[in-house]
Amino acid sequence: MDRVHGWVYLVTGASSGIGRDVSRALAREGAIVYGGARHLPEAYEAGAGAVRPLVLDVTDEASVEAAVARILAEAGRIDGLINCAGSGIAGAMEDCSGEEALAQLDVNTVGPLRTARAVLPHMRKAGRGVIINIGSIGGDFALPFQGLYSMSKAALRKETECLRLELRPYGVQAAVIEPGDLKTGFTAARRLSAATSGSVYEAACRRAVAQMARDEQGGKDPACVTNMVLKLLKKRHLPGVKAVGGIYRVFPFLNRILPSRAVEAILSKMYHVAG
Image (cartoon, rainbow, N blue to C red; front, side):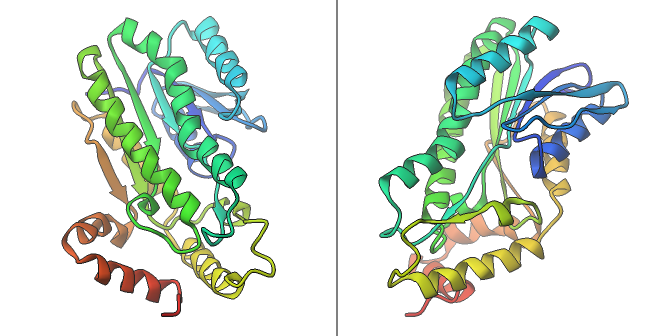
């Protein structure tokens, strides 16, 4: 099944990283692609398709509605949504404020819900459509000093699973792709909780975040996620969850079969957490 050629897609987070790579790949395969981001992405022409840039802030309801209205006015429909926009706030859970927690959830969890809510009435009416959310292996594991991020991605996975169940009668499918470490601009964009400086957790937090940065910058190219997106779009039935990125593909399986204490010991060693 081909859900690419001639299909109309909205891709969020399209100005860099996974979002930019997915947008360009869909365009090369002949899709009509609207690439949305807070800062206007560059236009990208390729093959039979084109990435058409638009300003889109997934935390702003009016911005989401305006973007979808433009796509409908120009293309007449929306067949697919790929949610790639995301952010990271690092810090000890005790140090993270309620405002920081809400901000993290707003981008990584509520943002994809906003865009899904905006496109779903049109997909249901058409009787077809696909939504792919870019999650993270961090949604399967409690990453020390990146708890807000793990929390937001775990919630995104459940959000996607609920969508799958609710959309079954309407011909619309949903899936979440969970990458491991990737070499993208996400590393540089990650910020520390405001309370980290001077905190009892500061040294351990900075060690863990430095290790995460090294792992990410030595990680896979975001093309591995793009390749998975294209692979799933050509399947008749989308799987609910798909992990990508080398050894990280087996991590969800290990999380299910290993005792929780073993998982905690592995994560503590990986990120240099004392104890």
